[in-house]
Amino acid sequence: MNEVDTNVESTQGGKVVFAEDVVATIAFLAAGEVEGIHAMIGTTMEGLGEKLGKKNYTKGVKVEVGTEECAVDITLAVKYGYRIQDVAQKVQQEIKNAIETMTGLRVVEVNVNVNAIFFEPEKKPEPEAPAAPVEETEPEAPAPRVK
Image (cartoon, rainbow, N blue to C red; front, side, top):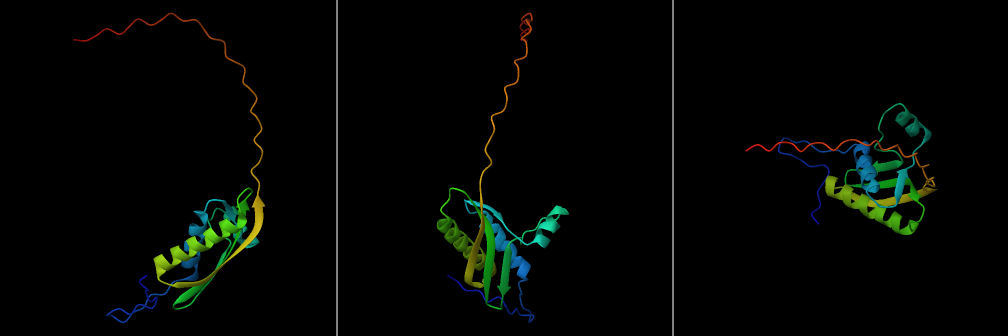
């Protein structure tokens, strides 16, 4: 695979630096694509921000970003019925692939913390609505044909 230095020197003498929130957002979105994940679990403060209407794309994700590599810690809830080890390994792969592909940073570790199991609520059968009486109407006359 082609390695890309995150401190890319340009002809004008500049560099590229990735903010931790950028890398955390990539990890959050990559993990969300894995089947069996219910949600990322963040801190109380992260939850408060969402209640105020802010969408948090870094909830439950902590990253350390260096000049060439990064490390990720993610906390999540897995849906009941999925093999947790398989889901966690898939999350690690997806996060590593997404960050390395999009930023060129080398991911040295992805630590997955499973803090909850999500149970689907039982679906209660909906009560049947009483059938509406059928009114008898005269059939409509066919529309005239235009030639």
